[in-house]
Amino acid sequence: MPSSTSLRAVLSIAALLSASIAIAAPAPGASADAGDKTRSLRVDRNELVNTGGWKLASATGAQADALRAPGVAFEVSFTGKDVRANGGCNDLRGTYEVSGKRMTFQIAIATRMSCEDEKNRADQAFSELMNRSFKAELLEPLPYRLRLTSDDGQVLEFEQLPMKI
Image (tube, rainbow, N blue to C red; front, top):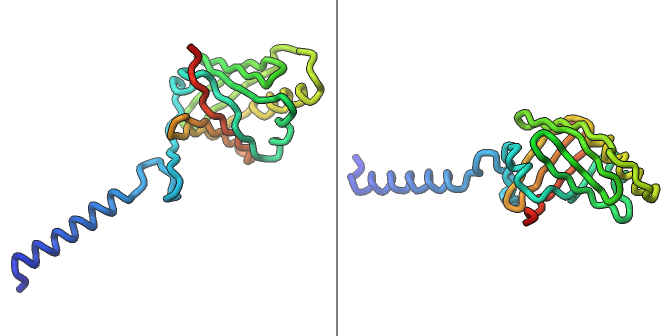
C-alpha cells in the first residue's frame, strides 16, 4: 500500500499536469494555430458602427484583381442599418444586415463622378462583390479586423480605422 506522502505527491503532479493542459488550451473561438494570436468574435453592430470606419486591407479570390487600381483604397463605414463605401471616386451606399455570423449587403453606386476608367471599374467591381451574403468574423487583437468570406471563396479583410474626433 502506498504511503500517504507518495499518494500526495502523485495527486500533486496530476493536478499540476491538469492545470498546465488547461492553461495551454486555446480559448473558445481562438485559432488552433499556436503561433497565431488571432481570435474570432461574434460580429456585433455596435463594434461595426463605433469606429472611424474600415479600410480594405486585403482581398483574395477570383474578383480581387478588379478592386486594384491606382489611387483606390476602399473604406467602409456603418451607421444603423446603412453602409457607405468609397474607393477614391464614387460614393457607394446601401444597407446591411447582421444575423449571427452572416452579413448581407445591398450596395449601389450613389454618385457618378467623372473618374479614370480604372477607378470606375474598381467601384463597379466592389459594388458587385459586396452585393451578397458573407460569413463575417470580427478578429482581434486590436485594431479589429472584419473578415468577410463569400460562399464562392472571395475574402475581403478590412482593418478598423481610429475614430475621428
